[in-house]
Image (tube, helix red, strand yellow):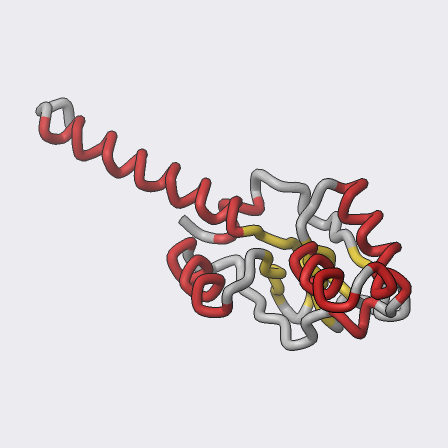
Length: 145
């Protein structure tokens, strides 16, 4: 299964983002309201400046306390963001996420961010793919194909 297939089940074009100069408190509120685990950080346009996850916020809360909520997003965000393409497979994306130890990945085509996939999206797609393969094998073994 391809990233294109995963995004077909999501809203393409609606990229939730925040600016590097916003506060961590603003980002936390956005994550909570939108019920998402990470937000794209960008100033304007389609270039990605970074990504900020709920994990990043919790890690800094544990390290320095509630005062970090007044810090700028740019101080906590991951700026070396890995991305994937529509033609990448679920296996490729899952491997990149596992190797990099992150759970959210922007999807970029022609230099433009068009979506974000989470590890949950990728795992659900992979399970669906494996179930289809198992069903097909069972049908073939039963002589129905």
